[in-house]
Length: 122
View (cartoon, rainbow, N blue to C red):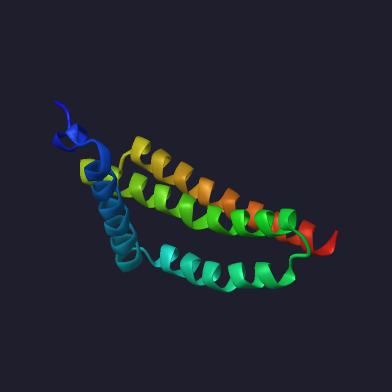
């Protein structure tokens, strides 16, 4: 069975996609504590990156490494919601999926730290 939304094309598809994206931001911000914390971190670090960077490459590295964290958190939250939708029972595959998503968020935070430390102190 195919999604009834896949038939949209052109500007209508674009408008729908933007609407779905904003709905995703809204629900993530409302329901996910980690996402709210990462948005706050992003709102602090992006202006700081603009202030501290000395060239365009540094700016791109600092901003991209910062934005990567909430991006990965959104994907992790989507995985967790999908797993919970299938079943709330404890299952080793559900745990594996959630743990792997959490590991991805952790690596994005390690990446953020490494990039900022290297750019600012190397």
